[in-house]
Length: 161
Length: 206
Image 1 (tube, one colour):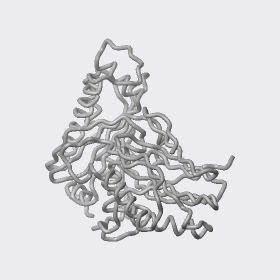
Image 2 (cartoon, helix red, strand yellow):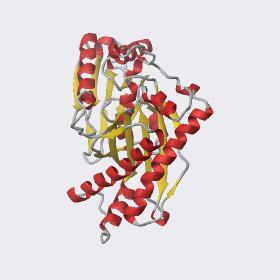
Image 3 (tube, each protein chain N blue to C red):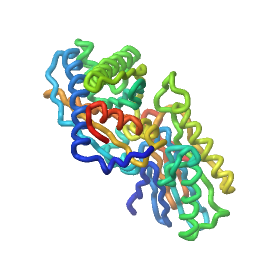
């Protein structure tokens, strides 16, 4: 059994087969899991914010949905993945706290989801499954052998998509 | 508007540490009065982290914890997060209710409300001390409670921070209650622009 590769917050990682990519404790952040069924190359990004356009300087491209997904795809192609057979799964984008006063920051989860979908659509990558929204955290694990995404939660059990 | 936290000098870090010390000290003495016990506090840590290291900082990022989060507004903006592991929260709730010997992992409505109030009083004391020390006017939002993975909870204030910077600065204070091992953490997370205000108010040149 190979070691799991950890993907931190504002980070992305790719792996060839066999490999497992894990990101722990997704809150309002969104985890984007890409899988190429022909080469079994996998990639995962853990984005914090929807768009790099809101930042004055973009130092870390992995922080934003729009830039991270592009980089992630490039990384997978570099490893030999075929763009045409790559599919995506999304998880995260929860609202952890239900503040009633602030407006923008509470919807950050939803905006992260929307921005991720938009970025994937622009690249022509189909989303085949998702487990997004709600108000609970998620840990996700992507396995290269079948592209299965395991989602662990506190109190909402285990889920496979 | 970018501050490079890695360039903070020792005096600045000391001042931030001291702010954490006084704030948490005040909060913890409020708690000690409420439950009528003695509570020990460790010296606060000032941590500067890149985002992808946040989950490494937590010993168990997937462990469910109770998080109480408030937004600060006024002269100073930022977040205060008070985090308790579930066992500690249960112990505190039992102590607060006096007669309880419950070991349940779940909290009913009344208990959740008690946790919220506990967080309210503690973070309120924290902010009061902060405000007194710096002569800055700081207002607090109503606290919000979430029980979930530590990593997911900590990501909420981290995202706020991510809008401006590449690293996040936490002032972390830990405390524990005698034999019962109530372990909790305070995180004071000023917004990026507020560091200068905070340090200046204490006469430290930025």
